[in-house]
Image (cartoon, rainbow, N blue to C red; front, side):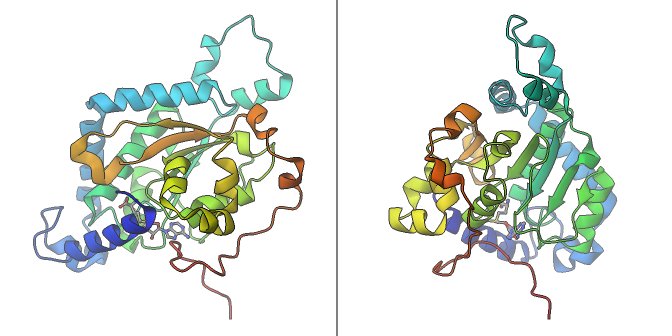
Amino acid sequence: MSDTGEEWQMARRRKGAARKPKTLLGSTASTCCQEQLDVGKTVKRIRDTASELRCEEFWQDWKGQLQAAGSSSPSKPPENKDTEDPTEQPDKGREDRLCQQLECVCYGLGSFSSCAAARYQLAMLLLLLDAGQIPLEDCSVFDPVFSTGEREVLRNLGLTVLTENEEGKRLATKPTLFYLMHCGKALYNNLLWKNWSTQCLPLMTIVGNGFNGMRERTIGREFERDYSYISLAVDVCEERRLLCPSRLIDVFSDTAVITFPTSSLYRLPQSTWAEPQEPQYQHCPDLEIILREKQS
Ligand SMILES: C[S@@+](CC[C@H](N)C(=O)[O-])C[C@H]1O[C@@H](n2cnc3c(N)ncnc32)[C@H](O)[C@@H]1O
């Protein structure tokens, strides 16, 4: 997929297609009425998909890339601590952060009961949590399109389902893995804005669309005006491309693991850190985010 806007449209088309009698799930019942979703069957299907992915060669590559990203950022999973160069003397703050358990936040998974891409992405999330030794309940998931049945499935898997639309504005107070697969740029931009400091950004590891690709596919002037935080971050983040087999191009295309090394952040002008303005997207023609409902 070449553009997050296109992806959004494709996802919509996929959802439309899923309403046809023959679905990606091969079931007719679960699509015509999501509330009648067979929770047990769907949980099993997700777990089976995770087992399938675990055997894929590209998963080994993902694990390697995540480990590499972890060793260059403070949000390294705890099990890697012993393999560190013992001659290195990390500062106390960094050491404390390394000892902390990672947590995870997942936005924009999509309707995984009717969309195979979202189901594979959910299964991959389970593998990532396992590899990072992140307890399932420490992973918060949210997508405004989740049905009641899908929220039930997620809770059955052991995940924490958020009830509030945070619009991606989640402050990382400890090392956090953010999983945003094929999400709109505004969601990433909001997340960066909320964490826009040399203290918070290094706590974040993002598995999602590469920022470089977003820049290449967006008109420069609009990218800088509407997505100013991505536009600043793209030059100082570390982006490791994640492999995607051709048969899963709809699911894992253009995915990277993104980290924010503290030393790189200091390359940005000091003025960029002062009073970061909350994004408004007033001039955005095609905003790829569902905003929270306004209180009346
Ligand atoms: C392009 S779709 C991607 C869906 C799926 N990950 C895929 O690749 O098919 C973007 C997703 O972001 C979700 N989204 C939009 N606004 C959101 C918000 N405020 N918080 C979390 N997710 C949101 C949409 O509902 C949609 O499922």
